[in-house]
Image (tube, rainbow, N blue to C red; front, side, top):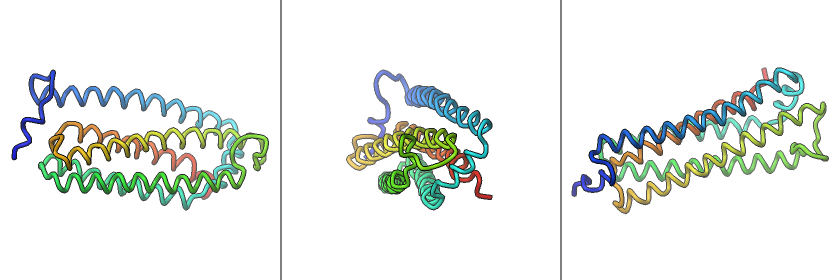
Length: 210
């Protein structure tokens, strides 16, 4: 059964124009996201330059095992998502649905590990506030940025997991075509979120460990 009737949607006059529209909208959205995260990274760079010793001390308190496990999980998910996109291009619906399911599971695994890490951080009193356990005081700045940046990233990843699950269900139900431009859009979003995590891993977990 051909998927052609479900590929083109209103108000697009052709599939090529629809794909261009989806790509333009997504890249515009990602550009705004890049500007948002760039602001956070710039804040981190400024405070790290002002308080290099405090940031090294604070970074050594992060759990590199959790961070490394999550990095491996997301790199694997990016690989699986790439296979999903390739399956979409080849109109291989079953492989596409399976890869989207695996990607969603890996995303949930990341969030689960992150939750365990957050629990340990709270237990070690690494949340800026009256009970904060580290000295000097500037280490609070590091962990303030840590909670904001990783929290915002986790929210983005949770949204990505929702999109992947929704797309997988729709593909499985044949509600959308395997070659739908939406698959490419979700793939780009997923790779963007993964790329942000790689930067966070380098900024948060690695300083002060050499």
